[in-house]
Length: 314
Image (tube, rainbow, N blue to C red; front, top):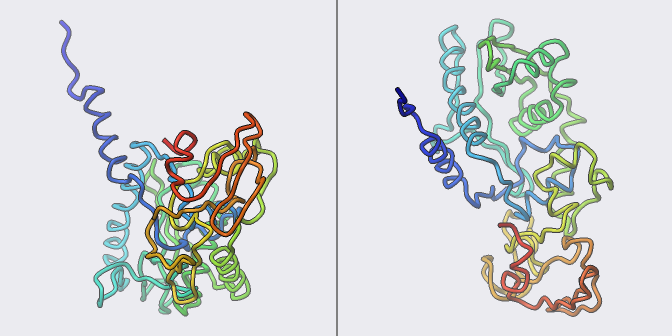
């Protein structure tokens, strides 16, 4: 006798699609401190400039949510053993947040804790979930060597919060084992990371590629590969327009005097266009490209979305 499965593939697909729909075209307004340890400044620039929306599948987005939910459990674990935890800003009710670059660069802490068995000093808190392989590597090598991006995140958190210790807690998703590590502030490194953020935020042009070879493993798995090494044209947004500049007070200004929303005078930054688009002419309000593959001359003067629709993200 054939019995219909309790959860049909279509139902599961609908669940995953629900997560994708919630996430659609969602961009952070700031450069996130959680990623500043990424060795590729170009990828961070693309992220900050809203050049591309990473296409995460629904399963992965659900996994992200699982990690977020684990944070509440870890906070409860800490409180159960006598640690005082502030996971929310009492004034806003939101995560504790710190900023630099006028707000263009920001980091939200998982919390601040005090009264650990190892020390009574206040610590910033950082929680992560890991698969078994990554968990074992982190446990054996420590955060700095095994997860340098996480370590950089901890450094930025301590620096901006004015603290000297971070309590890093990782949960093994396979076994539920917990790893804890007290991380010390490296002032010189933290200042270098802030300088890195400043360079990315205020750069009018994308930084150099981490690797020129598009098949390099660090590039192949980068969510911005399609606009960095591929043939895709970045998304139309104020931040991919030549007329717009990030200001020191955390705002954006437009040389055309437009409100900072995508308008009909969008003019792509030429340096972010595909490598087979060669600039053949340019003025204050236009750029002409020759498509090296077809010989077609394309004039970008407003209406970027219409002109390049066929080569944008779908």
